[in-house]
Length: 464
Image 1 (tube, helix red, strand yellow):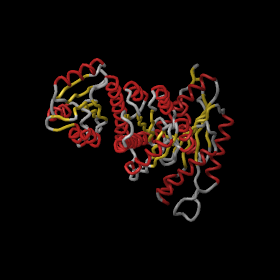
Image 2: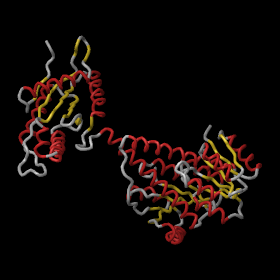
Image 3: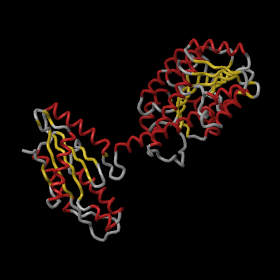
Image 4: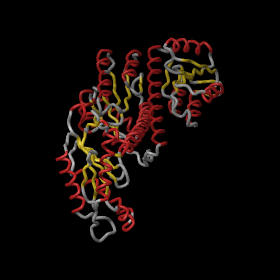
C-alpha cells in the first residue's frame, strides 16, 4: 500500500466514489461520516492524509484543521478538502486554517491522485527528517532553534513582466517577504549569481504547448544543487488537470489552478515558506549531528570514531598497492600539570594550538585525529620510515621549541610531545599486520618514549 487515507464526508456515495478511486491507486482507505468519528480515527491511528468535505456534521474542514494543529501528533498531517464552487468563503477559511488544498467538484481523478501523491510524499519526507532530528537530539547533538528568522525572498517567474509587476504590487502588502521578478530564462542564472531564493512562483502560460515547455523548469530547479530545496508554487492561468498533476509529480510544492488571487497566493506561500524553514532547520540539525559524530568539537580534528575505520581503510589500500604507510600515536607530556597550574581554559588553548601545529606539519592527505584527552593519532599514507621519522621530528621540534600563548599567563607555556611510530604493512607469518596491531605497536613505542625521558620519537621495532 502507498499510504493510509482517511475520508471524512457525511454523504456515503461521496465516500464510496473516493474510495474506489484511491483503492485503485493502491491506497488503504478508512472512512468517517462526521467530525466526531473523524477525530476518533485520527487519535486511534493517524493516517498519511485526510480528505475531508468542506462541511461536516459537527464542524467542517477548517475545524478539523484547527483540531489537528492543536496536537503535536497530528499538527503536520496534510488535509485535502473537497467542496463546491459556491463555497468560496468556506474554501478560503479552510486554507487559512491550514488545509493543504481545496479541490472543487466535479473532481478530476488525475488532479486528485496527483495532489494525493504530492501531499503524501511531502509528509513522508517530513517524517524522515523529524526521525533524524529525534536521533540527533537523543545523541545530544542538536542545535538550539534559531531565535531570529530572516526575511524570506520569493521570485515570480513569468514571461510577461508587466503582469509580474502588477502581481507583485498586489502581493507585497500581504506576504511580508522580499519579492523579485524573473523570466524563465533568467531564473536559474539569477539563483546562481545571487544565491537561491526561499520560494519560486512559476506561472504557466495559458496555451498548453508553452505551458508544457515551462514545466521543464521544475525538473531543472529540482536537479540543481542550489535550488533543489527551494519552495515552488505553480500557478496555472488556464485550468488543466493533466498539467497540474504533472507539475506536482515533477516536484512542485503547491498549485493554484484558477490563476492569480493575491490573498490565496500569500496563504500558500506562507505555508511553503514555513515548511521550508522547518526542513532547513532539520537539515542543519542533522548536518551538525553528523559533523559532531566525526569531529572533535574543541580542536576541529577528526575524533576516534572516524579515525579508526579510516585507519583500517588506509591499511587495506596499502596491502592492495604494496605501498607503505606510517602510524603515529602522540601524547603531550605532563599535560595534567598545565591544567592544574594554569586552569582548564589554558589546557584547552594548548590543545587547540597543538592541533593547528600538527596540521601545519602534515600533508592534506594525512589523517590527524584527537583520540583521547591529550592524545593524537597521525596516519600518513604512502609514507615510509625515513619520511615518517623526519615528520615526527619536525612535530616534536615545532611543539617543544615554541611556547604556547594561553589566556591568564604572562609568559608562554612550554610544552613538549612524545611520539610512538610504526610503519606498515609489516608481514608476520606471511600475513600483513592489521591496522589495530600497528596502532598497538605505535602505542607501545609511545610508552617507551615516555619512560626514556619524553620529548622524543620512538620507533616500534618487531620482536626478534
